[in-house]
Image 1: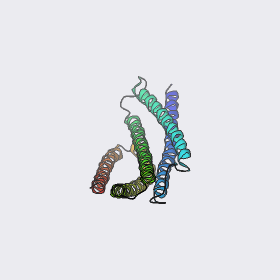
Image 2 (image 1 turned 60 degrees about the vertical axis):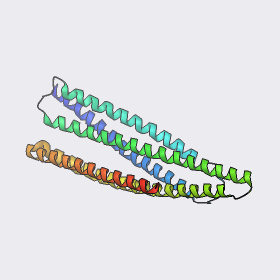
Image 3 (image 1 turned 120 degrees about the horizontal axis):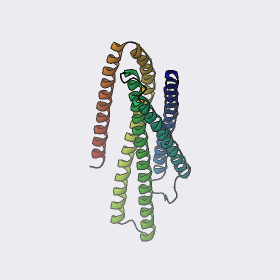
Image 4 (image 1 turned 90 degrees about the vertical axis):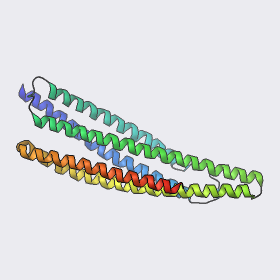
Length: 250
């Protein structure tokens, strides 16, 4: 009976690790898709300052379809990983499992933290993609309105000049936002790479922690400090982004 329950727990852990690896690869590809869409939009916007832009990007529709497909796949993987975590929680709360087995609870919490990180990263990347696409559609509409107005009036009067100046201001602000997003994406990819290294180190330390209780206490303190550093870094990036946006629109 004990061997059966142990095998069940190991099977759940294998499923969780496999889903986490798949999610990690999917999220990296998802982030690269968002970055490539941002860069292609910026290049398209700088081709001709006064050219008509009544058609979307040549690869915009294919990128949109790829975005929707990858988003659905990641959501499905997140749902499956949530289900596995729930089964692990049920196992630790079952009557046949010793209530004082701290190693099981620590392993379950680690998988929950990974799921939470992946979910947060997915929603953040998805929101960035949607914002870039919405901004590109808005700028395309503005350029089309300008061309329509110019062709209808036939003269370059003061109202058109003011409109073009305002449009140039918007383009400059848009360029600054794109550069900020590119920096944030590069930072996120760096952090993703570092997270992979930290996961490998943490896995080895968890193995030692299961053998030596004193090491387990040390790992918990390290995890608390790592979370605190992540919050501080996220706060600094958020403040810098807000300051850049305030500078761009004033």
